[in-house]
Length: 203
Image: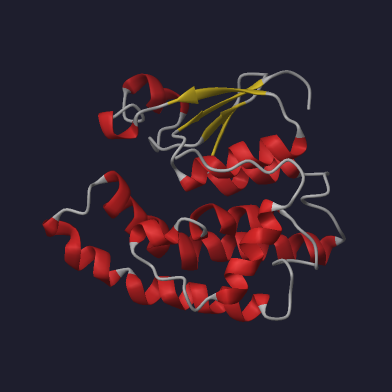
C-alpha cells in the first residue's frame, strides 16, 4: 500500500478501534484524525463532504478517495494479507462473520455501550437499553457456541473476522452485558490479545 493514509475516528469507538488494530497488526502507517462525536464533529458540512452519512470511521486514501464503514475499511486494509486469505470459500467465510457482527451483534451490543458510555445512561434511554439485551445475548450465545470447537471465527486462523467481533465484544460489559458465563469468549479474548501487533483500545 503506497502513500500514507488518513483515518478519521473516535478512539473509544469500537468501529474505529477495528481500524487502529488492523493497522497495528499489519504495520500500516497512517495519520489519525481524532473527532469529538458528541460535539458534532462528524456532522459538519466539511466532514459530510467526505462522508455524506456523517459517521466515523472514515478512511482517506493517499490518492484522495474516501472509504467509509469499518468492516469495508478493514477488508480494504487486510486484502491480500494473512488476515484475509484463503480460497474463495475461506474469504467468504470471513466476510460472513463480519456481516454477522454488523447485523446481529453491533446493533445490540455496541448500541447498549453507546447509551451507557457516550450518553451517560440517562433515565429516558432505559427502555431502549433493555430492548438491546435479548439480541445482544443471542449474539453472544452464537459466538460462545462456535468458540467451543474453534479457536477463531473463520477457517481455524486469526483474521479480520476476529478483529470485527473483538472490538465491541471485549467491552460489552460497559453496556451492561454480563460475560460471566461466556467462558469460550473470554478464552478467545486472550487468543486475540496474544496476536502479534495487538494493541488495546484506548480507555
